[in-house]
Image (cartoon, rainbow, N blue to C red):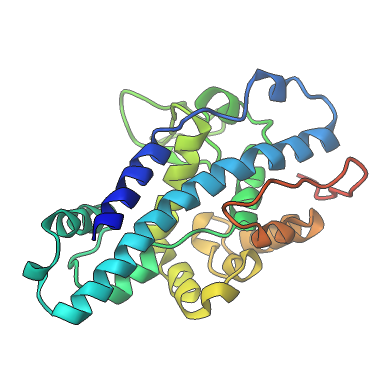
Length: 256
């Protein structure tokens, strides 16, 4: 189990990297086409990093259950790894560390195309003030009385605010964790578990109606933006592969 401890150290190292790709020069771009290209280019490494952390956790999960199936006894497994499983169970809202199906349903990466599409919609391709001021890429709310930005169009009587993050990477990490543990996205996780490697951004959109109050209209919007901007191509990117972006002449046609 020594290699699992090394994986854990790697995860800690990756999670400590918070350098954002969305520096001030991004917000000075005036061309809508170039801004979309830059948005995609800068968002990809942030989503990849979040997914890398999840995959490190998943490796720990897989090896833990391989050992557990052999021994059938937690006492025969490295107590440090057992404790790490308990920490993950708390993080992902899992009641038992021996529930393999739930762990494998929840501890898995999110399709790149889905993350990029949702970030594009929620930020208007990086144009929203909440993205610039709060580093919030996915419209995440907070009900904190001491932090958050009040939406200018918030209805009377509502108390929600836009959550403020220290970095866009933090926002991406929070988004991935949200999809992986919130009850609203259990159908998303179940489909991912069933489809395995065949799970894609397009497939994921069918289970995203709970993300927005517009429900099925939001699902249609996701598909339109994803297909129109050819974002499905990014689902084939390996976490260790170099980033490739469409040329300046490639069409990016969605209206938002």
